[in-house]
Amino acid sequence: MKVLIFGATGMVGQGVLRECLLSSDVELVATIGRTPASSSLTGSQPAVWRQILHSNLSDLTDLQAELRGFDACFFTLGVSSSGMKEADYERITYDLTISAAGTLSRINPGMVFIYVSGAGTASTEKARVMWARVKGRTENALLRLPLNAFMFRPGIIQPLDSIRSKTPSYRLGYTLMKPLLPVLHWALPKQVLSTREIGRAMLAVARRGYAKRVLETKDIRAVVNSTP
Image (tube, rainbow, N blue to C red; front, top):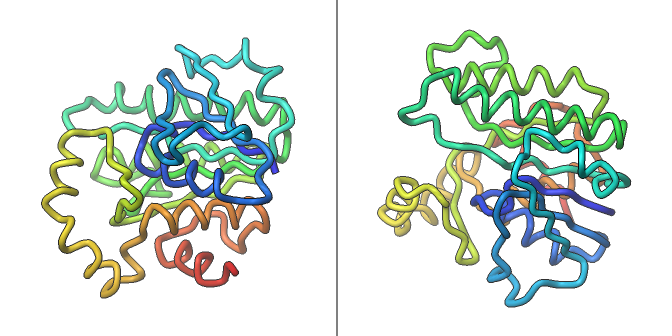
């Protein structure tokens, strides 16, 4: 399987990159971003890992030859909506995502495309919370493209394997919650997932699909529990 990852420098992206590099059936994993992803997850950059640096992720025209022939795309790219106006957040969250997915749907029609949004995303696109509306519009637009698209909506995420969030406020929050996260993970399995579990579930859905196109935390957990 050949896998493409957007957002491999983020927390979920690092998690799925690590699982791809550990998987015996992933023959190529290409990460695409403005800055290099860290090789600290493995200690070196394995031969199956290719990094593609591109300054304008909203226009992949020049990369079409490099992006052809992939079986799956894990789109984990995203920003915090805190302090952002809706138009600015939509430009990054909706416009960039749909532009990239549109290009991939033309050169790899039918490829598996897994988009990471979040618990609380509004499929109706009418939520009071701005980010939930924008994420809902993004999900709905992806589901209309000629892709085998799945939406992942994790809730609380427990970072493992020295993975850290890029967002300073999130890093502080995770540092403060670190002693509690293992307990929450055990006590609330339908609300808390680890970066390992999300990565493994994404790979499992890329291989076998899933009965639902929109996976809440409990569905992601079900995929993990059914994966050998």
